[in-house]
Image (cartoon, rainbow, N blue to C red; front, side, top):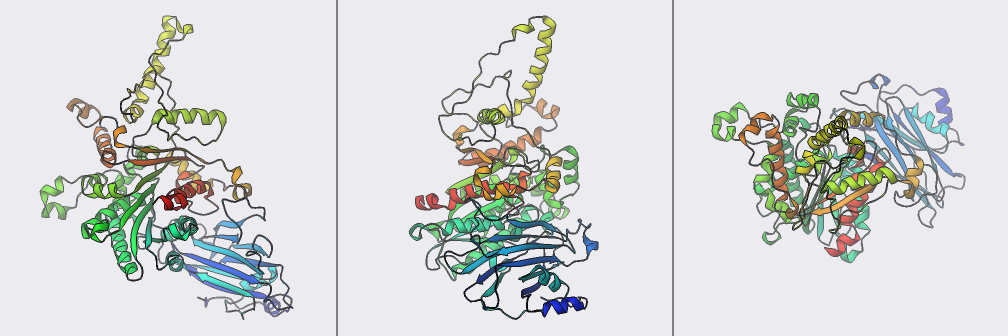
Length: 636
């Protein structure tokens, strides 16, 4: 796509473009819309280059050609792009001795980004004479669906030639022998065929959160999942294909049910289409944030439309992995500050915001058609655990939740981990981590005993009556503050669990929604050492345990006295959240993986952008290896 609205090229640019010492190899301009990515795979074969064309390095220049007047407009934008360059031999999980990685996190209107493509060991393909790089350009738009951002990309042998190219009309360049560029758009990247077309295929559906931006925000997950799965030996390879629904972009405010029905239609259509070409036998779902809820409802709608879809005996697919990362299964009410809760109730995120606040509003038309059903309607998040959905979830081979223990004020630990955890064990990790720094702690072993406190001694120096009262006061505050942890502490069958109200319990630090929002804007990216040296990374997974139904404590809010229901205004909310959490866990086990990544862990946990959110690499690596890697494939 070439623009017709460029100024006439300057005389200097014309002369430079016609000079024999400066070679323009590639000149491209495209419009990139919300959720879109363009991937450029650049290859240079030195053996095929003309003898006169001596190239040891190339210069790539990317420019956002939108008007600079659009820079401050964020409400309908931002009108910017993210761009990165990866040499052929770079891998996040292998020590990299090459040059610094090149990327720009936010290329604003009328700004340009330059990168050097060196023909050296970083980019050499094996022992051949071919050198290769992958360049990704991703839209940063979040709200405007139909406004493409014009982006110019030029490649030449000097900085002067690519700068001059930016001042001339975009036009095709005469091909140069030994130099090729393959362009993959969003649909090409996201519709890659299976590695082994003749073998059974494992379909993996990914669903994104609040902006439904599959194309860009789930790209890193797609790339790592495919690379990990395709590396497995052919005899046990799961033959994975990754797909996601792109049609919900710009519709996040319409409610979880609306989004889920569209995802369900897409998945059913995709299954039917793929069965015309391949043998489809397995399916998995991966959702981030709101996507975890959307995929849950989508599964239910799929079941309603095709009761045998998840039954191999009935010709359906075998459900393999149900995975959610930082998903608010219990909603966000009680975790958000009051002003945020009120804003959601008044439509800050439309119908979706009310769903997350556990509101059960009904339409007037629904009241007229079926008054009894309308009045008895439950919150959307509660309705999912009372139907046939539970039997489908039980059929999945793996149910895994990834939750941010710290630094996530958007979807805190309580709601993303389904309420019930081994809080005492987490307390120990919190204390040890504070003393010894970031380390990995495996708390998944069955013999990990809980701490028990039988008595609490009043310190000797508080023998005076006045001092004793001073000591008792903070103890009373601690007792009240820790009630919530006591109620959601898991138990061990056959072992009496004691929670001493006076024990000096140290819960994990809670993140605030404001600090999380601020970190999205101002948090610094990792260092080059972080990108190149896996040993320098301090993010870690500190809790990885499979929780069984037998570990659930007795329900606390199920049979509350009427007086307490009246006295405590939040009783209904807590009762609903408890019911949701128990509905998911009373009949099936869940693997809960808690991670400590910073500084803004909600976007980092999914690695929204490869080099900006790379603190979450460890999470994605754990996810793909544990569910689609060699060990998982061999045990399947």
